[in-house]
Length: 96
Image 1: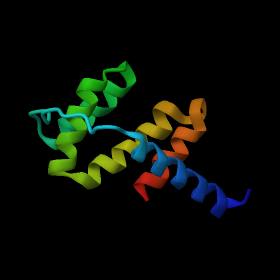
Image 2: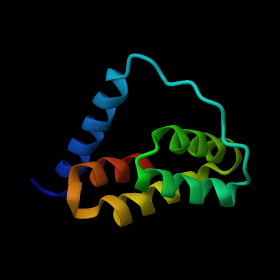
Image 3: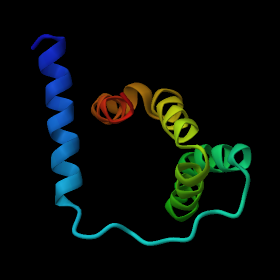
């Protein structure tokens, strides 16, 4: 596969994953400023705390969506990296 095919494959995987979700989870945004929400997002991903990660992401998507996507890109490379290149690829096409 060449680069455009790889990107298209990741986009298709992302679209299938989104379509497969039966329901969007509901949660309250974390009561924090964007800087604290960015830190909380990354730390909660590292610690496997999905509840806090979702709340921090919600806060960022409300107050600073550009920061949310940049932080997700950083998390993909720093915390996932070579352990799961497919997840990193899917995240990258979501950001771009």
